[in-house]
Image (tube, rainbow, N blue to C red):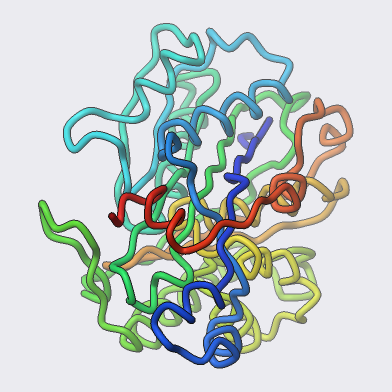
Length: 343
C-alpha cells in the first residue's frame, strides 16, 4: 500500500491579464482568450523563483501532515526553471525544511518533471527503502516576448508527501503508468534564454497522442471505465487542450472542471497537473477516484489512479489552492517585464 499522505500548493499573488499583453503587440484580445481560454496568468514576484515557491508548497504539505519530518528520506523537485544550472533545488528545499539523512535530486522533463519526481518517490516508499518521501513540481516558466507562450507561461508550485501507512494515506495509489517518445515539439538548448516550440505540432503528435495513449493504458491496467472515475486532472498548457482531450476520451465536462483553473493562473509547467490535483483533493470525498495524466514536451505522459480514503477528513488545514487563486494583484506589462527579468 502506498499513496499521498499530505499535499500543499503555492501560487504567487501577482497577475497579468491576457488583454494587457495583447495590446502591447496589437493582437485581438478576444481571439487570444477564445483560442487559449486563458484570461490571466500568475506572475512571480521580483524575489520569487522555483525554489522559493517549492519551499512554500512544501511547508504547506508539512503543516497538514502529522508526521515527524525527520523521517522523510527523500525529496525530489521537478522543474525546468531551476535556480542554478548546476546545484539542485531539492537539497536547498530539504535544508530549509529541516530534513535529515535524505536523498535528493532535481528532475527535468519539461512539464511532467513534477509527476516524474512523484513516480520516483512512490517507488522508494513502496519498496520500503524510505518511510516517507516528498515530491515537488515548481516552475517560473519563461517565454520570449511576443511569443504565443507569453499569454500562458506562469508560475506555481505543488508538493506531495508519500507514505505507506494505511492509517495515514489520504489518496491511495491504485495504478500508474507512463508513455514516452522522442517527439521534438518544444526545447531549449544550453544557454538559450527562452524555449522554442513547433506551434501546432505540439498538439496532435505531442500533447494529444501521449495524454490519450497514457490515459487509455492506465484505464486498461486498472480495469476501469469512465464511469468509475470521479475527477480528472490533465496537464493544462491552456484551457482548450484538456477539454478537447477529455471530449476525445469521453469524459463529461464536469469531471474536468478543476482543469479550468488554467484560465485564471496560466500554465505552471511542472506544477500544472499537480495543482489541478491539489484543487481536487481540497474538496474530494472518501471513495472517490482521481485520474491524473501529465504531459511533458519531448515527449511523454505519466498517469496515476488515486482512491480517496477516510483519512482525508483528518488532514490538517492550510490555505487551499483556490485561496491562492483568489488572492491576486494585477500588474501592468512594464512591471511584468521587471519581475520576469525581460528587461
